[in-house]
Image (cartoon, rainbow, N blue to C red; front, side, top):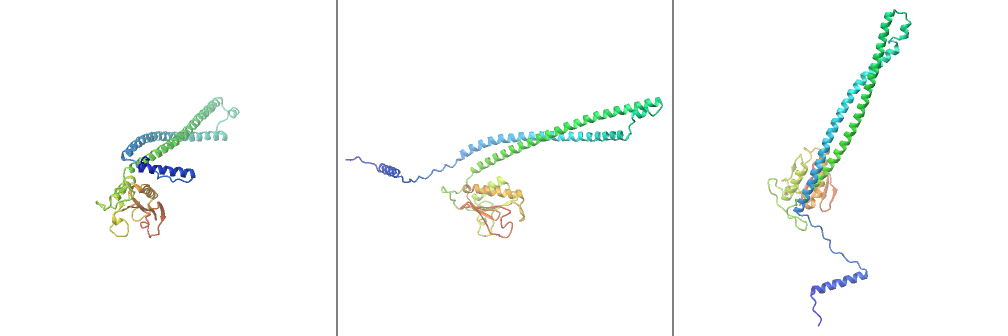
Length: 332
């Protein structure tokens, strides 16, 4: 009697036989479903966050050191410019005096010794005048030497000013570079903190359980989380409007939408506020799946989680109606 084979063993034997036959015949074999990377746990995220914060502290220290170096370089540059200004002032004064001496010499205002000797003047008076001439020559030589010193000091001041300006520019470049590194690191820390939060009511398949509005804001817990995270990260100085009782077919009366204002009174936002709106919209897209964000409206465009793309919207007749002064975010 043939030995009894368990059903599972028979199935494995059949599968192996079919697989070998398919490979031998050169037929394509379908691959099994790929295993997705497991979602990071809260503990893992906290450990990664701690590491990021240590790196952030180091980058902030580097940035602080660069600030001190920049302040010192700026102080030295200002001192060098002040020194050059003083040297230039003395140089201009001496230049004026030197030009006056040259003009006097050229026009004959300075007594010439040969003319004095040929003039037949009284010998005593002649000696006095010769002594005066010698005194004037000595004075002129002194002024020339003094001008040379002033000229050299001015040149040294110019060189020092140029060197300090170069040092200041280098310090500013290092400061900006380290500031940029620190800001990027801080953004990574913010991203890691965001990952610690997950939308309440999310099913294992990625869909979301409907929620009732609650609390004084009359918004759902899911919308409340999105509102909190955006308020903490982007500040939104012109306010956040959420629940509206008007039944307009949207999510506001259901407590599932908020408007993050970038200006007041329907005015177009400034360039800085428009950039803030861009960052809010980009953040919402990046975190949409995890936080249950359904769609975003901003600058007469709509982004929907189903398609993952922006599309244009029709003109609704105004800055606010066309969402130029605020991103609108709706959640499931």
